[in-house]
Length: 394
Image (cartoon, rainbow, N blue to C red):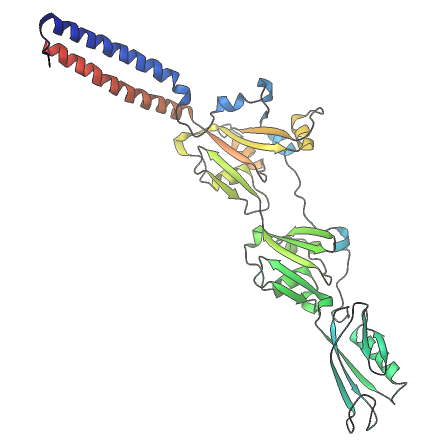
């Protein structure tokens, strides 16, 4: 290695100092040009607003006020159709096709038509009502059972047998059968097929007979499928709305499931997650509270956005425009620092599929710039220190 001395050493040290100054300037230029790409949780407020329709974007940006909060609300569609709510409870002893009944016949002679020799009592167990509603009784023939009560059927069979044997006595027992049963599936303690009996004529009684719910009542949805018609209600409506506790019919399918709705929270919130509703209605304040609220000094309370695809009828109402066609992308802006901001957020409903995005505070971005700048200056300082050392060595 060739030692550096004399004029050559001075020239070398001067070159190093110039290189350090050049490196510092270059680092600053590179840092400033890279500020826009500093790490961040997502787009900032300015970037989001740049995507508005007014700036040739594809989303309408709407500041939430009392009118907007009111116009953006929609009525949750639930409830049973009139053909469900208008029917009356079944009589618990009406016989249906598919049911099973039992007969006992006493004859007033020692050797009767139905019994064995010396016996005047005959028991006919588990006689199933066929698809047309009939049963077959020896010496009485085909007897229509469907639509009758056990007492009415007893009188019919007695009258027919009276033509064959003197003064017969008949007992009819209705057993639980498929013709008057419903099925329960989903989030109930005991899934299965249950007969419609006196305590289970209505929906709430049938769910209780199945052991009740296996999920929290406030998130339970109950669907009834009757033929090709269906309806749905919240389980809690069965207690608060008497018309929701409908009378059941044989063949009904009852499905209990948890509310599938959810929303997503991103950005500078307490946490970022997909969150289930857990209640029939949910406002913006409650939605943020479920993820821990805003993230301390990192979040911008002026920049809370709700992103949503709004149906045409709601978009027209919110924008107060009649020329809007089809669903529209909407960005609702909530400012939680305004005097009425918290009240507006409380009155603004969150819907299924919404995305709540909380922007970072400007201070947070500046902190990142300063941090990056400090790191760069430290790196350049190392070059300057090396240059100074060489200069001193001269």
